[in-house]
Length: 75
Figure 1 (cartoon, rainbow, N blue to C red):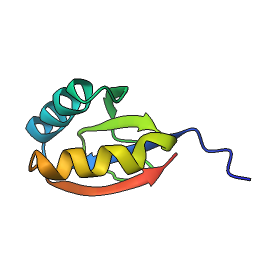
Figure 2: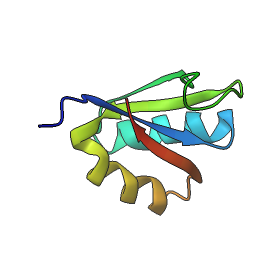
Figure 3: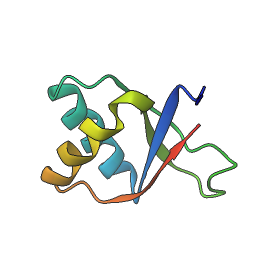
């Protein structure tokens, strides 16, 4: 059984993070802009936290909006 509740979507810039947040909210997908967790990247920056169960809905929405993603990780 997977007990991970959240996933984070890493993007290449803060502007992509802000755009991702807007696009996901418009699609009705709950999300939150957060700092990138240190265990995922030592770079400073922002990422988008979503519920893990929303990953399958979020990825096509972001792709359609041309938000370039660096990765998605369960946290």
